[in-house]
Amino acid sequence: MEPESQTAILRPIRCELDVLSRSDGSALFAQGETVVIASVHGPVEVKMQNLQYDKASVEVYFKSIGGQSNVGDRFREQYIRNACESALLTALNPRTAISIQLQEMEDRAGLIACAVNAACLSLLHSGLEMRFLVAAVHCALTPSGRILLDPDVRTIMEEGGTVATFTFAFDSIDRRTVAMHSEGKCTEEQLNEAQEACRKASEVIFDFYRKSLKKFMKVYC
Image (cartoon, rainbow, N blue to C red; front, side, top):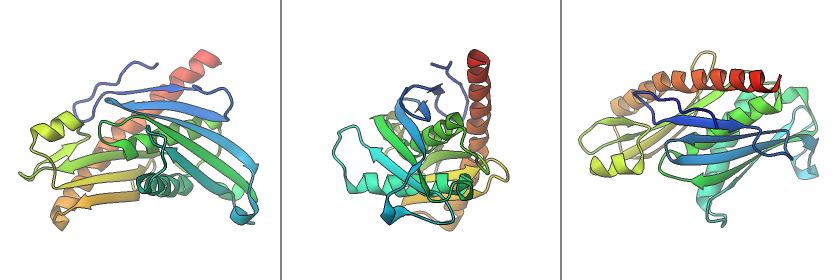
């Protein structure tokens, strides 16, 4: 397990690459006590109904800790697919599939952001060609109007709950927003404030990617 990355704006981050032997890329990623394991298979043979002649089909499968599939899992799959598909150079592998599988190990808030970051690291480990990397950050709006970056369940409770939550995913080149999800009520100004706070915090995630991959390459080269 990589040493924890301590930051003033995010929960401690840690990861481990190559955690699964029967995959083309895998990673365990943790933000605070929220933990997700991701694996990548591909390019592999694609099912006929998902066949695309000009690019690879990106398939995402998310399993919650309880094991039972639900509507929330389907939403998470769509969000992660949108973020990862925007980053992958799918045109290089037409008529194939790239399968990303994610397993929730623990959820103490920010599960979708943690899953996106786990998926990105597993794609990096797989060696698949990418346009850019993707980093996701979640934040919450408190009843008092404060923006909490990457809060855990305890922090949210101490603040009296939330009136809105946000998850933003950004690219590593221009820091453009490639995926976004919000729940609850907020003003446009609060939404913009949350987005900019998360955009700035994404620098921590991208820096962590670079350091983690560098350490991994030193160990295995």
